[in-house]
Length: 348
Image (tube, rainbow, N blue to C red; front, side, top):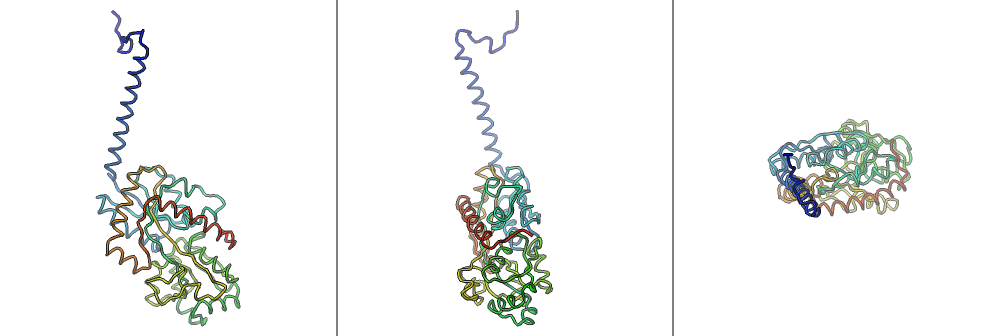
């Protein structure tokens, strides 16, 4: 007797029954796959998570990532490790994350530069700042601060923004302007200042605020529009002098320092160039993983200790929803695309 297969034993006069059985088996297999995916997501993380910082250590991006990493490690019971990958105005680190597996184990501490400015400034990017990322949450917003080496400012008799503009116009090209990299908010804040005042300064891009600050303190760099948190210690220590903050209102962390708009006269009316920093994951990262990270970040930023720590450095904590963060990224891209075009800023 020939062996009979399970499918051949079905009555040939009822092909629909066979189709129904196959469909049921397929549905069952799909359900098992979905159940396995859900279990894997609910158990996340089962290994360390990497937070890529696309700038060198010592800058605001790095400071905020290192403030959040231990909080997330405690919340999830796995290490959140900060990995500095500087280069190309943040594009190198952002590209690494864009091309990483979307399993929740690689995150980016993105900035207004990587996700608001660079798409307009760089003619070709290896990644799409919108399509290749899943916004998680805005961590903090900060003003930039227009600053000089304190000794050099005294030597040049520059005490405020008006003095700076007067000297820069009388000495075109003699001042250089440090930044954390081409296309960063620090760079663009300076370019906006130059275009509005008609001054010329040579741009010197570094791989992050940390290396730039070393030259600012040493006196080989003249002016910088740095993110306030990374410069706060040097300003309070007297190594750097803050001429103005770049936000629309004065910073609670430096209440006696005027804004660029109020200190710069008619030419700088309406000047505003703030920065922001937030966590992003590769596009397609499971929504429940994204939401869990956002919830824990928001919880941490809501504690009195973390609020006090960030506010003292000039950062305003957020922790908003992924949807709100996505809307911010979209609006910031539109804003900075106009600044890039109007200022004529280019990548060095």
